[in-house]
Image 1 (cartoon, rainbow, N blue to C red):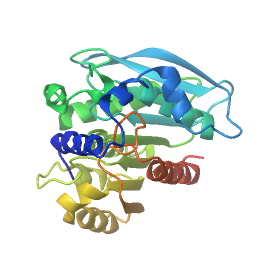
Image 2 (image 1 turned 180 degrees about the vertical axis):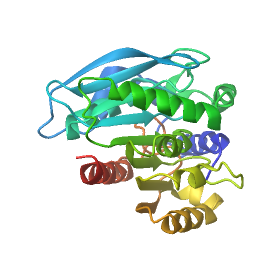
Image 3 (image 1 turned 45 degrees about the vertical axis):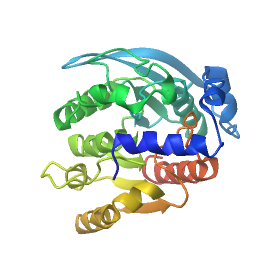
Image 4 (image 1 turned 60 degrees about the horizontal axis):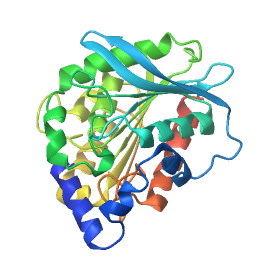
Length: 289
């Protein structure tokens, strides 16, 4: 649906419009600032969070894990965008745990190359600086990591293994979320993607074709400018999931630019991000609870 260069173009356009400068953006690059930017959770569940290390066939992944302080909850695996594991995604993971009582794992997708933070200036990092990191990942690493991370979740006392696992991906994390469902079809019950990049390709290992072999329910939130660039992708997604008889909510978010969901980006669109967030909670409540 997009490539990473489009994000940089969109961000520059956002700055030209005077909506948020890089200087203003840098002023909120701290964990406390991030927490203040997210709406407060009503009736929040008490949670416990920590940094964790996860062994995989290719090394050790550094990650963030947050879960309810008591009891067991469905596991959720979050795949970040190209800017990687950072304070914004930690806050998003914590919000999800507090909102719905989920045990949430947010991983560093680039652990094979370097520990987080992997973007020198957070979401203000120029995309060309990050492309070499993204190029180290492929269909094989996606599947290997999916199995390792879901397996790790299932070993945690705070995870309810009687419930299905959810997974969500942002930008380049979209294909990873799709392939998690393909790699673990008996465990993954819900998949959500937000401005996912490369969900539909003309290759036999296209993420959407692999995901169609799963047993999951899907939420696919599409950026308006991604849709303009590849209008047939949503059609291919709809037809593929209908043929596979898999429930899929596919929507183009009007006025939302690629990258609109994480609140530390200059293309963040709070009303549309909150709409997408509400649809995610509906999906998880329906499938995982």
